Amino acid sequence: MADSYIYVIIALLPLAASMLVLQVNPYHALVIRGILGAMAALVYEVLGAPDVALTEALVGTMLAITLYAIAVRSSLVMRLGVIKDESIKADDDRLFGQLMNELRTIFGKRHMRLELVTYTNTQALHRALMDKEVHAICAPSEYSDEYGDVPGDEKQPYQTATRVQRIYEIMQSELSSPGTTLTYVSTPDSGKKHP
Image 1 (cartoon, rainbow, N blue to C red):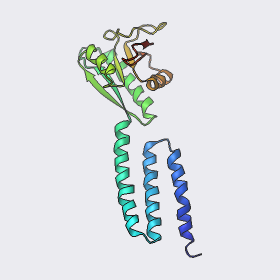
Image 2: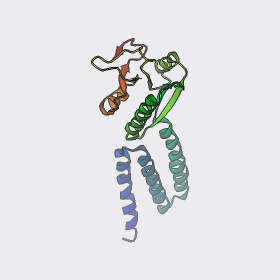
Image 3: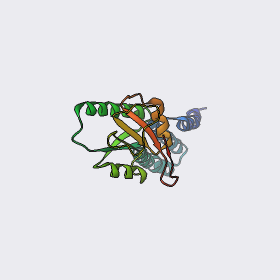
């Protein structure tokens, strides 16, 4: 009965593993993975395998979490192509700032960060979308008539187009900014355009 604490620690392993699998936030999953690795290292040490415990602590916990953190951080980015134009009016600049703040809020709920990638002209901007350099583009409507207007909508100051269906669905359901028209563009191999 003196070793009952070992059974408690071992019982916590599947509990921590279940929490890890069910976690939605990838950063919380990293923390839980660290706790799981530390508990496993403790169990190995208590059961008399210090070499395995040290390996679990160094490789299974510290190295794995570091690599996972780098992978999570680099994969949760929504790249938005924009035109660098100094001639934008103050009202348009204010609308653009509101639109970017709203996009940051929308994607922040999904633990993604918004990265703006600037291009000098519309041809480079549209080519970047088709070449999959960016996930979406946003440009003043005067520059971006290539994808056309969404039927029934009045002309908006900005037009946003995306090639990723899920990003389109998220933005369509949550974007409330009146300053943009949203368009879904198929990939170049399908040759179709969907408003």
